Length: 81
Image 1 (cartoon, helix red, strand yellow):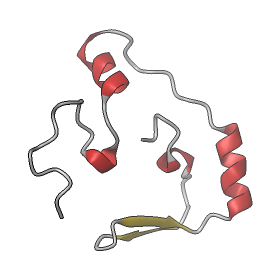
Image 2 (spheres, rainbow, N blue to C red):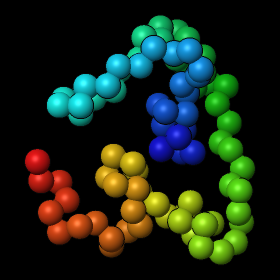
Image 3 (cartoon, helix red, strand yellow):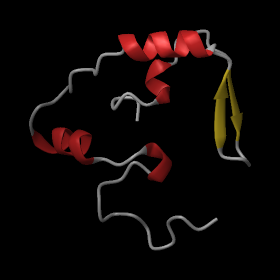
Image 4 (cartoon, rainbow, N blue to C red):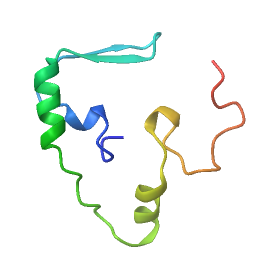
């Protein structure tokens, strides 16, 4: 998610983060204007490997919210609460 520019990519050292495990939500105390400024300045990181299994994983992996697995590898009970 962070490598794709998701919200985790915009966090910085010192940001206050609150995790609601039961609600499955993460909050941050960053002001909206600051957040948008960070989004505009964000640049995708260079992949550490351009070939091999790690490059394949980095290019194809799903969101951490879905288990960070490759397509077709979700467990049968995925999505059940």
